[in-house]
Image 1 (cartoon, rainbow, N blue to C red):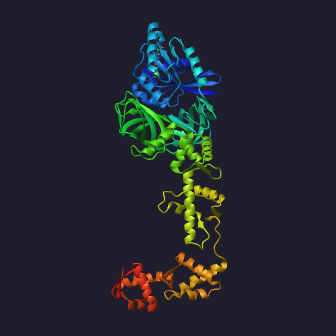
Image 2 (image 1 turned 90 degrees about the vertical axis):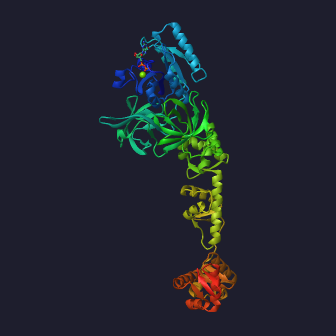
Length: 637
Ligand SMILES: Nc1nc2c(ncn2[C@@H]2O[C@H](COP(=O)(O)OP(=O)(O)O)[C@@H](O)[C@H]2O)c(=O)[nH]1
Ligand SMILES: [Mg+2]
């Protein structure tokens, strides 16, 4: 069954509610106060089956200027607008405002009904028809049917139904495989059931027992029951008026403007980069102007940061960043309306381009370029840009940022991969990494490993976690990658032979473990010999000739120990173990506590060393700026 949402629009008392009642048999003015005062205050709902497989859900909106904000909460989900104009009054202020809103929201189907046709003569009706034709010229309603009708006599209603039928059939079916989003327009307690919320399901599907997330609360709740048009159902799909009975939350915690969505996918946001159109009737908008922001069923204060220029002239379109007073769930493609802070009138509207933007400085060329690409709505360019901005992202995260289906994200990502713009990594190839980012990271991995092997020739490889943090260190522009990304990257590099993976250890490809066990023994002997001798170090020659291995290999091992800073060469023929030098620093520190001056004799006495060692070590200490020579003495620094 096809579901289509039709919304009314038009000035107060022009017969919108009466028309919905005449068409459906349901009075959309459901409140006692509405009935008593004879005006619509809040949204009203009714439905009508126009064919066996076609159901129309009506959203009746209030026409009163004080309740435009309620009108805005309903108009977001509609497919077709019924612009209602009373034949005896013609176009009035809220006819204009509601019509502006429909245009700004990008509604592109509708028809015009001249109601109360029973109250006017033929000539009057023709005159109003001409006025209306003129009014909608150049808009999406240009050329749309203008039907005369009367809720009182029933005249014109059949024709209206058949026009609605014709328009509905022509509407494309709504995709049901997008992530679920349901902007909430009502929340109340139903005796014996608990919390019930209602709304127009704008994307995806929801099933009984499903877990959903309430934004911006971040709460996960269970869907206990579903009603679609007042009949119990197992699932609801995009385009349907839906009521959900929720378990695990109280009705009073939920308000109009919150959104029910697929769990764990979206981020609430307080900033939106948008393209925004200012109505010709509005005053020019200055930077950081406060406005009322309406999107979906949400309404909040926002500040408009102009991204290009100091002022947005009336009638112009520009890029803006909206800073919202409260976070909410919005995704690219969402349409919104802004109303002047005071007096409250509709001044413009637009489309969200980026729902997770950073703060910008005005006039930044890169920002404007970025937004121009997002605005063009070419999926390939958009996705590449979003990936480039963050370096890497999962298909699910990209679906949340774009509002696309995950399958669509992957399709576009695969195309980009075929153009060598991105690389797809991970077990299910759903980690999208921008090519530049991938190459930068791969280069860093090789650099880090080369450096590591050069300074640690005796260690077979670097643990992955250490590598991960090293990648982001050392003044590079690269952030520490996630473990998932690094793993995927290393596997890709291993497949190219650039690295070798052994459990948690990584080493450069083609690099062999350097030492035999014989060499390792010899290395340990060299180190131990110097360590044991302390400051009274042996000569290299003495140590090396005592070894079991040949001289050339022994010298290589000595070089490695020096490179690894296990040993230090203090003069051409004096080598010390680093622990001996460490000990010397401690001796010096203790001496400094008593006396900061030191003669050669003092030093010999302190260390028990002969002149042969004392002089080079003192000179070493001078070089290390631990002491300073003054005449025959030294000052401990
Ligand atoms: N004569 C006549 N009166 C109508 C017609 N439609 C509505 N009305 C009256 O106009 C008034 C306002 O109608 P309503 O549907 O509440 O207007 P809304 O504010 O646009 O929803 C009510 O008193 C209705 O009875 C119509 O087709 N003919
Ligand atoms: Mg009404």
